[in-house]
Every structure is written in C-alpha cells, then in structure tokens.
Amino acid sequence: MNSAQPDDGHLALIGAGVMGETLLAGLLRAGWDVSSIVGADRRGFRRDELRERYGISMVSDREAARGAGTVLLVVKPQDVADVLPGIGEEMPPGTLVISLCAGVSTATLEAGLPLGTPVVRVMPNTPAQVAEGMAAVSGGSHAQTQHLARASEIMTAVGKAVTVPEKYQDAVTAISGSGPAYLFFVVEAMIDAGVMLGLPRDTATLLVNQTVFGSAKLLVESGEHPTVLRERVTSPAGTTAAALRQLEERSVKAAFMTALEAARDRSAAMGG
Image (tube, rainbow, N blue to C red):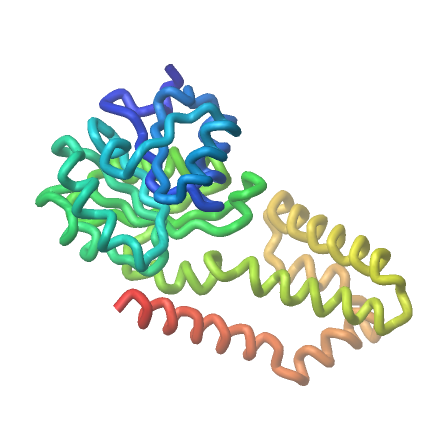
C-alpha cells in the first residue's frame, strides 16, 4: 500500500461530482489502491459511471463512512446538513473529516458531527482537473498537525496546497477559488480583441491561450516578481506601454481589487 494511503481505515469519498471525480482520479494517479477508497453519491447514474470508469466501490453515504479513517466530503453546501448526521453515526471515533464544501465553516461541520471529530476545511479550484489546482487548508478546533498534513497530502494529488488560518478562507475564495474565472474573463476579452483587430478567431484563440499559458509558466518557474517581468516586456514609448496606459487610465487594477473585495464579502455572507 502506498504510504500516502490511510493506515487506519479506508478513504470515504462522499460526493462524486466534478471535483469528487477529479480527486479520485488524482489519488489513483498518485498510486493509491482503488480498494482503499470507497465512494458514495446519491445519484444512481453517477455511481454506475464511477464504478465502470475506475472500478471503485460505490455505496451509500452511511456505508462509505462506516469504518473510514478519512472522510472526504465533496457535496453541495446546501446538502451538508442532510449528509452529516448519517455519516456521523457510522464513523469510528477519531475519523478525520475533510470538507471541500464552499463556504461551510469548520464550526458548522463540527456541530453536525460527533463531539471531538477532527475537521479540516479545504478551498480548491478548478485547475485541479488538470492536476494544477491550488488548495487552501484550514483546521477546525480538534484538528491536529497530522490532520492538516493528511488533507494537504490528498490535495497535492491534484496540484498544490497551503495551510492558512480559517479566518483567511473568504479571501482565499476570492483569490484562488474564483480566480480562474477572472483569468478566463481576461482571455475571452483578449480573444475578442484579436478578432476585432482582424485575426481569425481560431488564430486569436491559439495566440492568447499559449501566451497566457507560457506567461504563467514563466512567472512560476522564473521566481521573478510580476512587476519585473512586465517591465521587461514594456519598452519606452512602445506598443506594450501604449496598451498599459489605456488599462491604467481605466483603473483596471483598482477594478480588480474592488472585484476581489466583493467576492470576499460575498463568500463571508454565504458562510454566515
């Protein structure tokens, strides 16, 4: 058995939507034995799909939680209240519950589970689907270092993970949780601009997509500050300077900051 796998019971994956399947596929790629994971989903067709696709055992929520060492909760936030009582009755004492349910606090989760249950809250994002996700991990009142390490270990199967105090989770949601949408919005605008400038749409799409991909890779691998990289592209009185001046005059940076504040505030309101 791979050392990353639970040695105190199986991993119960509760919820087989897009993110649930993404995590399952990532864990299997990382070397987990499919027999060490038990899945659950209330939709019969999804249970059938994952059985056929991965050979995983798919059962009810309660059956999956029974005897589990770790429960990975990947259901819709509005379904959490219905799911917790059932799995709580089946989990052995000390079972770790890792929640990827957006906006649901560890306090809310702890209130619906047996007293003393260690809970870890995770905010993932959609690039996990291509093993390039960014997840923020926060522990509840009963979570210990080993619980945070287990959650991080699981999330690194689909990207990177960082541990933060739970008070930062709304900001994380605004930055990385919703972040892919902002970038897709910019990409969409750049492609439309390319078409407006006379390029065929498929050509504009290729140019923009690869530029964004290459720029992100350069940013990460170079370790340079984005300001330094931007200045290297910006020649005095050149084309880039002309474009950046327009963005500055339209307060694009300020608009981004205001937008992310709104996302943080909305996250806090939904969690409250």
